[in-house]
Length: 478
Image (cartoon, rainbow, N blue to C red):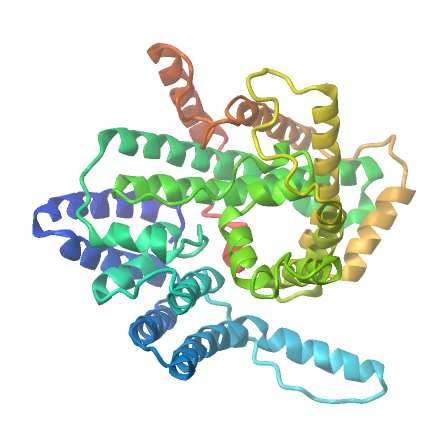
């Protein structure tokens, strides 16, 4: 089920009403409703893959329950290995089997061999990368003695399947989300109102900005040779804003929806395109994933404890694995490699933590230095998006080569495409004014009439300009 669908517009108020009617029966009954609703939400796409969520939940509930009281290191490691093997095995099979089989075949063919490796054309279950990482963090944290095992299977299954963040995050940690399913939840009108604002803003970013910008970027990336270098530059800008609005829009809707149910999810995006270097970008982009890789890949590799050479190795491995997480294609690995190479000099100089606060704090406009830093960072991340968006490495280099060598004085894009690109500029301006908040509509500093004018204006824009075709969110494929 998609957030931008009629079915979800019916589903959400029904589940919301039942959820709060069941409050008197306690959190366990509400959790049972969450599990049922979440399975309906996920099964709306393909009910057959519900079994994977159930298996992942059951295995990690059992493994966590075995690891927690166990004192023998060998058995603790065995149960952790069970969790890792099942979760990563399922993820690897569904997401990477065909990719590695095809890559191995192409490699052997380049060596003059003619192998015939099987490919299964496996359908990728929606959200498998997200809920797999969420359950893995539970068993790993129990093994590290950072969180206790949970005894209530209903609460645990609700934690895994919670429908707002089930298929595209945020990837929550057990220590922050699980306790919320164990305690009684009270309806908070203030939180619910802010949740509705965040849902509204997320929906605007998805159906008005992202889906319209897809009409600018998609034709150019599909046939870049038919366009000028200027058209390609506009398409890169359009895709950079598209993927941000598509994914952060999903996160906004997920976080806002969770607040309607008395559940708080972590912030997943914090205005990343206002970053002053790549390190700050990764502290603000897909925060739940970047911190997951930091804690469960970078730190176990040794982190920054063993000298510059090892630190550099750990950084590159982390970025390469992060790239591969995004999809079974070498383009994603290249994208991760680019970001690793951009991040590495900052880490080696010790300046990767230089920008911690909000840019231009307390000022309307950035300084010239800040503006140039943001422009360079945005330009570098946008060029890296070419590899993320392209179908192949060859296609990405072909795109960039054509853009560099073709003329920039002619534009072939339609007037509608330019209008949509201007919407993106307007989006950035709106987000700039709210960059010190969790989302652009939070705590607007206007009188009541002004705030409602903004809400009605955004709603009107969604109704008039929104692209309603139940277009999937980009990150569903990951």
